[in-house]
Image (cartoon, rainbow, N blue to C red; front, side):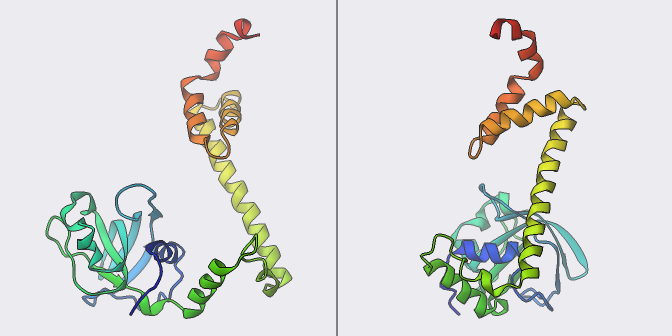
Length: 219
């Protein structure tokens, strides 16, 4: 069964759990329950980190690797890389062979190829081929007024939650000093949208108290 798409689409499907999750089983017949699908890893190493899965009667914590075909585990030489020994599951569209970690242990494999709705793939093709400025602009009319407003409200709340968590972290790192926390937020804003991490590091290396000590020489 051919997938016809790149691996990043399969990663997106796993990240957002866009497949039929009923009665999941590994290729060796063990039941699988997804407790946490993990966080997408943008760096080297397994595709998803900090996953929590129940396989059979045991709960596992670790990484999840995504491949179009299970044999790619060996093709990509993960079977010779000890950094993949913490993988607890391989998720594939197709299964052509069982694979092992570098330490020789069998890696459970979950095949979701037959669980992805064709309508979802068709919608993906439509979005890719759409030349509009916003590819989904012609689909928003298919949503009811209630659905649109619920979605917008959820986005607003999510954005506020993210901001609150960020500023709370500044407050914690500054030991409750609101002026220092505000300073972190301001310096971070100077780096938006792509250099926020670099400016956060600048705020750490150039703390507010140091600027206050030299404010007379600055102005």
